[in-house]
Length: 179
Image (tube, rainbow, N blue to C red; front, side):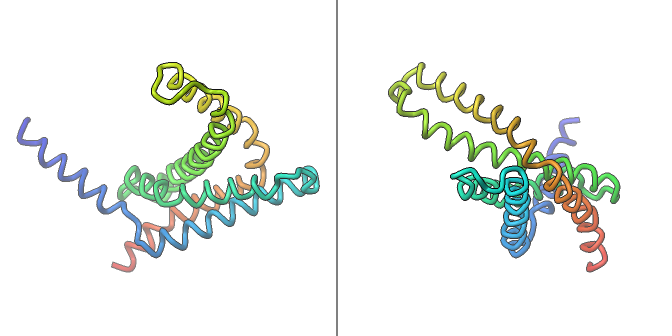
């Protein structure tokens, strides 16, 4: 049984290596995905209140940067999770991981902004109180972003996530045909 462990570890490392996307795909995909999610947020803000908010550029920038930052890790994680699965599995898993990675990266950026704002009232850095304030401020920011972003993601970004899932399901089939 102990002899099986190195083989399992090497299989995992091989799958991990196989799941790394090509650099050009990362670069172009991140830019395109960021712009598309930002466009979905812009459409939502425009239709909801006609861009009446005075910080709409910052809001759109948050969604663009979050989506762009999430593309490569999300794609790698989805490739790793799916392995050589069929199109149906890749569609479902790719769609879920694509959504979760985009939302997580954008929520993290929002939490960092939230933390910068509230840092002026927090305790000094190397203290237990500071650690509690950091954790709970970040948790509150992620919760607030999750609730507020549902309006932005629905319905426009849902179409994007479905298109991403279709693209991801076809990605492996295209790669297999080119080999």
